[in-house]
Image (cartoon, rainbow, N blue to C red; front, side):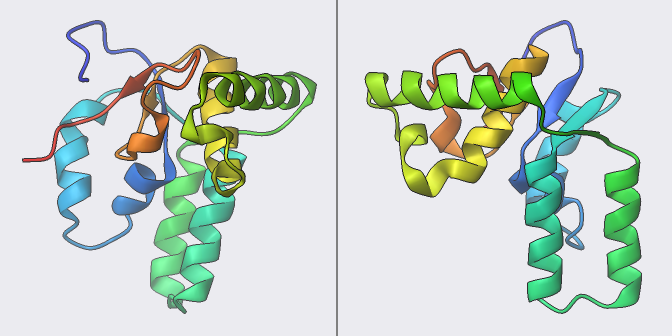
Length: 144
């Protein structure tokens, strides 16, 4: 759900963040108006996922430099005692609620969700796994 106002800072999920690194990405174009003018944060987990994907696909030097420039212009939130506690609390809350985010295959997603919860900011994502997660605010753009 897109916010009506105000347009404060957000945490950006890997799917939306990495879409900007793909030339002529329809996903990046869809989310650009939602992110325009907003302060963006990303989780350390997003940085790891983006770098992994680039290395796996054998990106060249130019594309890697562009990726690193995008990471550098965004505030990266690193782990620490508070984030670790929130991550564990989130997994328990999701487990008790029967939410998919509790599942092992969503470990990375949980770190990203915990980052948004820790900062008290909405998570901008195109991934439905986050919807309805306990304590997590989300923003997304409906598919056209």
